[in-house]
Image 1 (cartoon, one colour):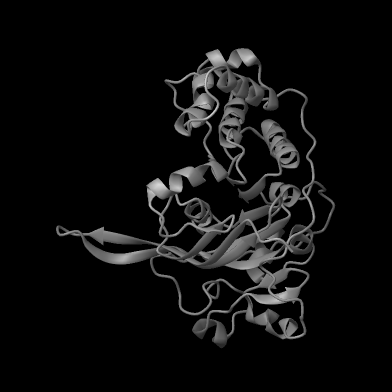
Image 2 (image 1 turned 90 degrees about the vertical axis):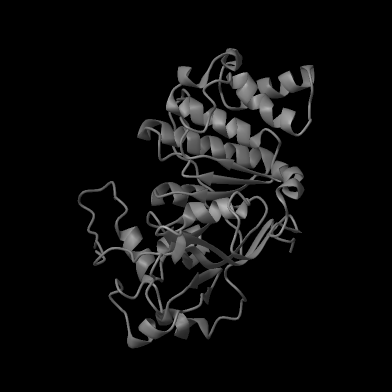
Length: 351
């Protein structure tokens, strides 16, 4: 079995909260609090959870756009923590980010041609005619007219701008792409086009994705595996089909029960969680989910459960899963891979 492309171990990203005239530290926001996972080459790890659970912070920390407080991040066998920005620069070609907002992530003063040529200029690649050919090839791959290279971002629709952002991310043929809510700012009619574009690019170029999203149905289609985050920690991880067919953590069960079903006559039980997610500035003791969990026990208030392996690459951080994990002999669940992404029906013209 080949080495995973991404290996994250006990990653923590904490932000000090300062106040007062002297700017003293008043507390610490535990945005990511001890996360471990692996991503195999060519697979898509979906990352889901409520707003504020730490998904985007985790994705950016993996790319070293945010410096971690502690832990280990390895990409293609190279340890990233501790490297200076100068040492990281040549590694940037291997890992790129697709931003959530296609309006704010493109420089309005640059033409599309200049935006797509910039990665090659920064890394000193494909000069002159060769660079222009690369830009044209990227526009072709995105389904955009070649004349687009002479226009500015404000002249395009939201879906077209996101295609430009994706083209910039894949320009240098990276191994890893972190897609941070890449469709949430787009019209519903355009989202399927962008999702299918990402799936096609993965198949053609062998890309590896960390796909961050709120839309659980989109995540189900795109992802090989899914990791569910709550208050800075992964509470469940499993192959996509396994997670959606049989979620084991109470939080995952509540999330999936809220997914709309396109059948008004189909019976469904909605699990409503009481209260709001606790503040990462002052997380509860023990299991972070216990104040909202319908199955909380006294043990949950005292201890934080580990990820118990449940077989088939499935793991859940819940004491209710502890008994099932004792009969499992297939090793850690967080490093498995397999399966494939589905395809959504899409309109014929790019948005």
